[in-house]
Length: 145
Image (cartoon, rainbow, N blue to C red):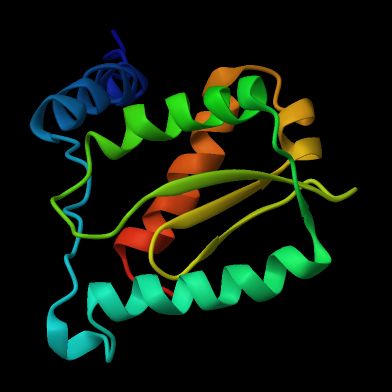
């Protein structure tokens, strides 16, 4: 009588149970947000805000800022919900809707976030727009400017 080949059964059992054990051992924590030290940035937060004000003055000569209270309030509401979860900072977060024909968003030094009207229109829901704003907030908090 021939002995049955148990290798296929052993491989099947290995494949069925090993991934579950590996997943049970792993924990997925979000990465820690590195807070820049003063040595990593030549500007203080106050200087960064002054620089942002100067750049914004120049920028707003060429690009129209939409001064619609309802649209701006919508963007500010999303931004404020997100900024409540950020580390403490002296930066002044401000949210602006600007009028260009591109789907775009960007930041200026000191906490200014600009989102194009077309970006707001293209976002399928508030979560998508919040993702864009959160991305821009990440640039500010990491002091990429």
